[in-house]
Amino acid sequence: MTSLLKKPSAWIPIALSLAVLATMLISFMTMGAPTHQPDEGTGAHLFQIWLVLEFFMIGFFAMKWLAQKPKQALLILMIQIIFVLAGCAPIFLIKL
Image (tube, rainbow, N blue to C red):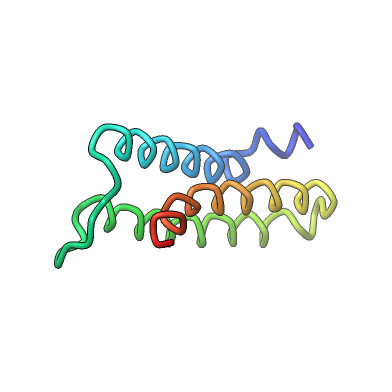
């Protein structure tokens, strides 16, 4: 698994998810939870762009590595998906 995890297509989606999660948590701690506004703001637009990027990067990883190294690729795909869900979790928790 470590050899495949060294590939950029494996670790960049994880790093982006961690960066988004850290940015959201820092933003929430400094400015508080976001309130409903007519315009979503820059943070919401960046979050939406991040989700689209994650979708395509994880899809690229899956297409490239599932056929070559299926067991390792599935494990890394699960890790990537868990980190994407972790990045989305604050948004879902705020909506409750």
